[in-house]
Image (tube, rainbow, N blue to C red):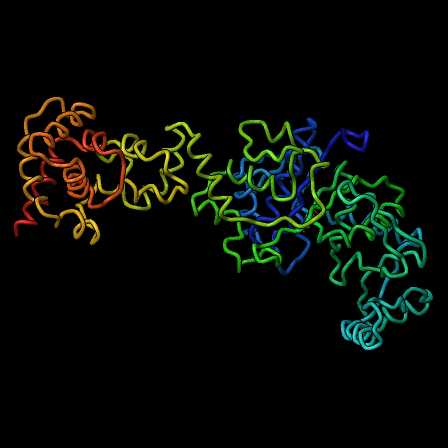
Length: 489
Ligand code: GLU
């Protein structure tokens, strides 16, 4: 159930002034989940009104991040040049004449007025307020200028912004779907700027106009915006519009209890792609950053998140980002992947490590040997590279295993025993090698370990005999003999 009877329409409205970070990704996900859960519409709107800080690179990065997460939007930008949806344009800078219209309406109704204060005057106002321990807010000095005074100021070349006239008293009550009723005393709120001196709209104003015109039913966003909400609510009221339902999501903290930031590690979504997390892991993990089912279910596969998500399960208290849990979860998701999908996900990491897709033995075979163990995709090349490169013996393997008494002899006679052994396959090889141990009166470890180190250079790795089968007789024999030769030297 939703609190509003209107069709569900949610939006993510990023300001393209940087990457999509973890908090923004969670906001996107919750809006997407809520829309999908209620068979509604998910809108992507680009709030690019900050002329100085907005960049097209950021737009690209944000669209790429959301696409990588697998969160499709029904309305909004298509690539970098197109747009789809009945409310286009979805870039605020392309909607300036729309804001102009409502600005005029607010001025005509007496809800907005020009303010001629300079930056210096405003700074001084703030300084004085601080000195007198008052909240630093605009003191309203341009509220009641006469038409004549305005004309004079303009004739003197003074530039103006437009401010919204906040009520002097009373309370603005925001019904929040997560926090309940949040109350703001109007006397503590200031007449905020809705049009900058440069002519562009501010966030608080453009956001309201767009949420209204785009028929947004639910505004789900981070709680850093809660303090903007009373200002926005007053604009809805002034224009006679019904506000959407609001839901402000709790803050995300790092493990040390401070707001999640660069200090805590990767913050941008695309960094997580690079680090080898799967998009499905990210969706699952982000969903749990501030939301839970009553039974605290942790893993949601397929459509389970869409079916389970609701705002009632969102918490007020901050969520803590736990990288260890995220990595555990990635391992769970990787284990669930079909081999074909694992190979597709692994492909860029294998390529980057210089292992080509057509390498022999086939990558599907070698990677599948280690499928269960993988937690992060970049681990994959390191787990299989000994198949494709000269063996490099780790110092530990060399000292503990190869230099152990008898290892050289084991390798030499085993190479001879396997030279013509058929079939060179997992089970048969195991029987043969075990029989070899019995015949020579050796413990299995005295034989298995040297084989592993000779073939892989390491003391740990995939299941031994299947690994030998996949490596193939020729290479196994070469490596057994090469190791023996090194020990002889
Ligand atoms: N452009 C705002 C931001 O990126 C959007 C806030 C909102 O969702 O209203 O923070």
